[in-house]
Image (tube, rainbow, N blue to C red; front, side, top):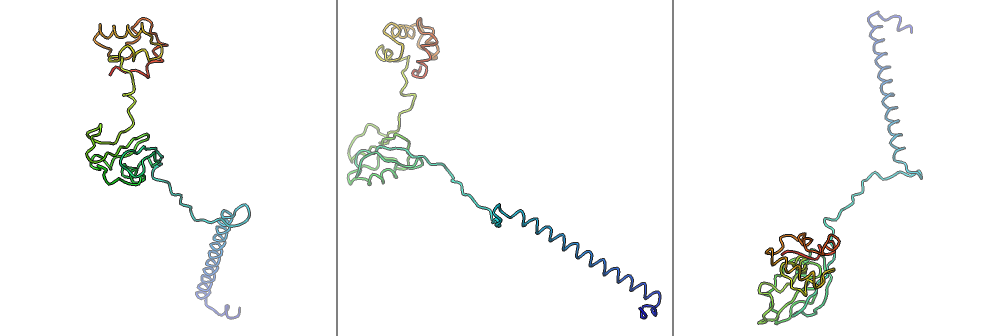
Length: 213
């Protein structure tokens, strides 16, 4: 204190400013430190599990499959080692099914097959032998027939075929044939209701079974 009293006014002012600056610096430091401690405690609480153990902060990466692959059944016949019905992924090819069947026999005519064709459910693959004439001149891979080819054409079916349809007896079958002869054929299956005795209820039973093609 004696030393402080001997200082000049200017020196006292400078010392006072230095003391205030040091005090402010300490206050700022402790405030920042306390704030960091609070944040650390808050983060710690967030990471704690119900059992009091810290949870891992690493994200779990769940890999998703690129495509959902189904299984189809393919019937392999002809010149293969083990003919039969085989299960294969829906994205498989003919060559994959042939491999499952043990491969080709020595006299198999591979030229008649498209080994790169994709498989479909209920597909039939027939492998001919060399020199054999198959029913298909393009390929011996016979795919599942289309729905359209299974429908009964009311423009070309004969009396017997028409009578196989539900609700169609001999009289209605003859009326269908007479209608198409008089009108040059059906242009739409709905025209079937123009025939006497075929109403909406009967047509509902027939609409998914017939075509005009």
